[in-house]
Length: 403
Image (tube, rainbow, N blue to C red):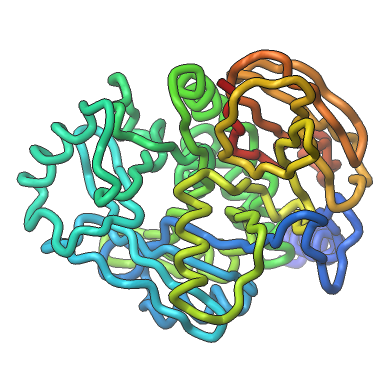
C-alpha cells in the first residue's frame, strides 16, 4: 500500500516545495516603493473600469466592490452592469477618497459597448429602442456631448468579435479586457490554465502574469482607428469575481481585490484632487473624455511616477489627448518612474507604426509631421519554469494629435 502511495506523496511534497518557492517569487520589474511619488509635471490617479456586480454578471454587491477598491488604494472605479433598464444615469458618489462612477454597458449588434458620462436624464427603456437610437448615433460624423463617450468592450472576445466597420460615434476600445484574456487562455490551453489555478494560492500576481501576452488584434484595431480619427485605449477589468463550476454553482475566483491589482487606468492631472467630490469627479471625467491617461499592467510594477507629454518650443507641458498644430520644436517626452531591472524598450509610435525605441529612463522624441503619437513600454521579465522569458507590454499611453 505504501509503495503504491509513494509516487503520489512525492508529487504532493514536490508541489508543496515548489509552491513555497513560488510564494517568495517577486514579479516586480522595478524596486517597490513604500510611497510612490507623483511624476514631475502631473498628479497620477488610478482607477478600474468595467466592473460587474450581482445586478448583472458579477458576484458581489456595490459595497463589496468599494471595499476591494479601497484596499487597493484606488482613486476611482466605474460600475458597468450589463443591460440595466430603464437606464437612468447615477451621479458620482464619493466614499472615503474613492470616487464611484456608474456607466451603462449594453449589448449592441455583436459587441458590448460601455457608455461613460451621459448627461441626459433617462436613456432608452429597453434594449430594442436602444439599438435603434444607437445605430443612428454611431453613423454620425459628430454627436452631441450629452451622449458622453462610447467604448467597445473586448472587441475580439469569442462570440462578440467586432467584424464590421466601427461607427464614427465610437470613441475608443478596450485594449486589455481581463475576462477576455482569461477565456482566451482557457480556450488555447486548458492544461496551462489549470496550472495557473494551481499557482494562484501560492502567488496570485505570478499566476495572473503568466497568462498575459500582447493583445495584437486589439492593438492592430486601435492603430487602424488612430490613422482615421482620435481613438482612446482603455484597460477594462470586466470584473465579476465569479468562476462558474457548473450551472448554478460558482466560486469567487479571482476576487475583486485580486482583479483590481492587475491592470489600471492612470489619469495624469495638472492639479491635484482636493476632496471636493463634485470638482474631483469632474476632473476625473474630463481627463478620461480627453484621453489624458495611460493604462498599465500594474502586476509588473506600480507605474506611478511615469509621465508622457508633448512639449512645444515654449517648453509648455501638453498632456496626453492634446491636439495641436505642427510647429518647429515639438517633442514627445517620456519619463519612467525608475529604470526597470529587466531588459526593456520605450517604443515611440506614429499612426501605429514604430518610429524609434530607446532603453533610457528619460527619452525625448522629435515630431516633424502630422499624425497621432503614442508610447508603449515593453519589458522582458523572467518567470519561473515552465514559462521563462517573454516580452510583455507594461505601459500603453493614449495619443497626442498633431495636425
